[in-house]
Length: 277
Length: 330
Image 1: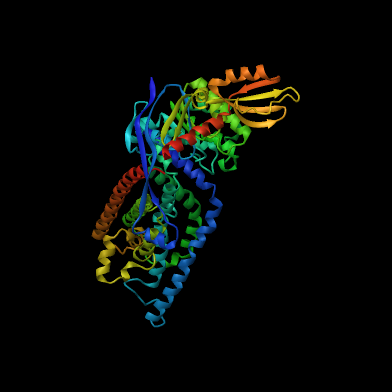
Image 2 (image 1 turned 45 degrees about the vertical axis):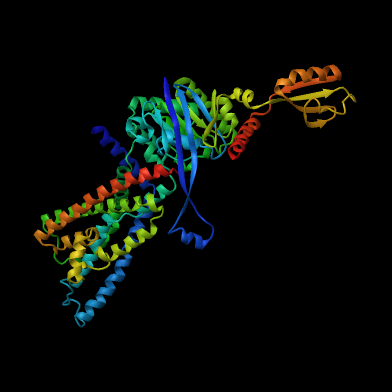
């Protein structure tokens, strides 16, 4: 056990060093990430203005005031910082296509575990630098968080939902990447996934805006747990008993994708090694 | 003790036959034609501990497929294999800690980091004791003369240097069996020589069992006492390098220098004429009649100089390959 932990630590440390080679690129890139939000905020400003017939302060949409809306977008940025996995699925598929995957058949190291440590390192390296622009933006926008800091319990739930969001995003995208054993190229599959994710994760708009039957569907799908859910928890939009249930659904999806990725890896490797390449 | 035992090992690939043209490509989305490629067909082979064996064969002969089977990257279609008592394609960690595969420049190294860091990782995943690790790394970097490059990012190394670093990565855990697929491909003459020298010395000291494929006859001549010639997925020859000549080359090359203006007009009764540059003639003479023909030549004509040579190895082996092709087509 100790030996294994040490191995993991070494992988993590080396991956971290590798990522830090690119640190210069981080800071500017992070600020740029907030740009799309600004357009969304202007759009919502106009919408709230027309609903409140000129007065933005009094208008409300699905229990969201204008400051709520801004806070929501900023918080989904945090959620997505944990759950989005740029290049993961396409990277796995590329490794399968060009045979780099052989490394994991020959060396005594587990690919999914290796990728996960890599991704943790990736996130740590990125956000140890990106935390500065994040903090700056949140500080400048502090006025929009009208309710102030949530209570410790909600805060704990928020942090848990972020960490679970990371795990969910990781195993989900790894599973998509592993489909590369059958399709070789997963970019169109990934595109479809991104499209659904954009609308149904809450990245585009708060899911509270969805009408009734859709709400239930979105609750049951894994997507909303990667953007909407952490933000909603922070803003106190999730009631106590709903919170436990939804965290449960999130965990269930993680377990599902862990098993799915294991299964795909096993089947994929036997297919790969049957074909050669 | 046999380290490697193959019995009737067979591998058939199913490859997709893509037709030319866009329409045909679209059709390929729904119905695909496959063709079976018999990459390896029924190979029997045993290798004892400490042997250094070369696989020779033209492209597509099944050399690399055999190495992939032995390292567990692919599963066979039929037949059995045991390496160090393990079935390779079960991919047990215990087996994976005891062998290594080096395939061209497919990098096991982290591109943006110094090789040193990749080696640290290998130390962990192969569970190498720290003292052992330091000793092996020191020995290998010394032998290959790359000690000062350990701290340089891998992407800044030359091809030859990178190959050396790859070799070190593969050897850090002191594998008992080593598979080398074209270890000198793409290297310049000096780097090739260095890698060869290193492998020779390493094998002498460690008595590692090594299987190597290479297109460079020099690699083979310098390193391997045993040569396995593979063509069309079958073993055509298994023995010493010199034995290939005895077995497959039916003739010798005889060069004669006649005394000025004494060159006979017709030499065809003695052998096949390869080259005439008066007063010199190069003849190809059947191996079993060389002595007889030479005796009559010398008694009938005035000859100043004679040399008898084996034909070049490359030629003989190329001949073996094309013969295998012909017999397969027949």
